[in-house]
Length: 596
Image 1 (cartoon, rainbow, N blue to C red):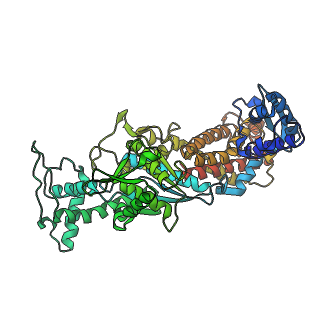
Image 2 (image 1 turned 45 degrees about the horizontal axis):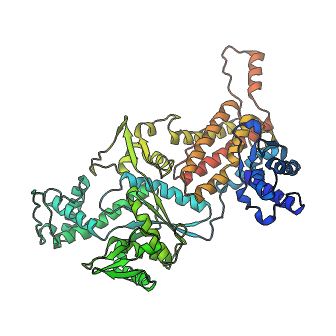
Image 3 (image 1 turned 180 degrees about the vertical axis):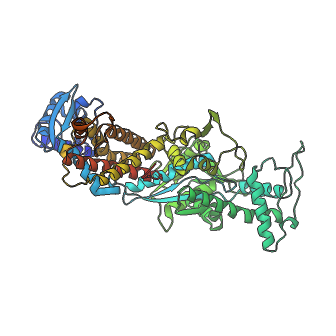
């Protein structure tokens, strides 16, 4: 019997007690939904397999002492199929012990469902637009964007496992000053000049500049001979780079697609496949910025002041109003944000019921204005728009911070990380920590084959279970004759309980936007499995005492060999663990090797 089944049973008992007039002043409308009746694993196994605080939840509404109400629940639970015993403890906890067959039923449930075990449809009918990474196309993906790639894609997979339709989206900031600075940096590099003080540095700038020149030459364009206006220098003699020119525009229009291609390649190699690659520039070229402003004006949220156009965001909880068209006629950056949200909610294909933005730590100040804009469009902040803020990543090696990238200057890029520890370790290590917390990536640890390396520890549990299958096949052990009720040892019970908790964990990870909970669950399951493997056998152990002979040797073998029905049941338990670990790793975008 699963925790979900027990929750449903407790919910039904609560309604039965009400209908029979045994629950004091409690009425059916005061009973919370089934999902609110939490069934937990007791820390002390002497307290049973599962515990519930349902009586404590309902006692005040019933006008009863929690223990008295708990006794009523206990009496009903004791008569339910699959329950061995029930005990009321402390102020009103209900401790439940299952019979062995009921506890072990999860094994067949897992094996029958396969990789769909735990998946549900409670988010079905909703389209979630999940935008993540969205780094400027002015350089390689840095380590912060790499974290969002791992967390974002894992979150998308978890949400899909909960029935949601997820649109993975990357927003290219290809309009504005950062693109101008990128082009100026390329022109300076092409001429062998210093990088402009507001420009981009790194060997990749020289690489892209050379590629632009080669591509232009192949097209019959001598890009370096195009008109170029020297921007001069500042008062300290630092070069400012060129002003507007044909040369800079030629570099821009050729280099930006090159960076797009490189970013797309990096994402694909990192096992992240986006459904939509959205270009900011299209919001202007298609007139969507003007339309969004017109919509807000019609709602009474736009006004003119000091020659500029303002969004009256303070009406919707922001700390100050926001300029969207500056007095010089140029759009403020926030104008594109307004148009982009409107586009997500009203596009013809897959309009978003929920727009989830995954932003870096430096965007915390954007939350107020973004939520105000959401409300101004008639939507619900926190429901139709959700903003997740990620924290910083520190890359460590030999106890020291790693900062230098040969290619990108004073940053660590996605390619640097995967070259050092591989995609599996990179994705797992970045997704296993709550994005609300900073994370340290220890390159030495994550490249090691040790139990201290969390991704290795989980993957090794999967590989070990596959090895058990191979050994079982060689010994002629199959599922035939399996009796899961024989999975009655303490170690068996711990594995069974861990498997039973997966569906609730998966649902919780989706609802809380917390894919790191999947990783933590996998590590707990792996630990439980490794302990089980060390004390229980599917296949008889080889004789380990070289001095044992004759009857003594046979006695050792017999002691290590479980009876066929138990061996077959343990093989099924082994394979159920294998199934769930493979499923969990896949949700994190990590492979499940069968050998290590």
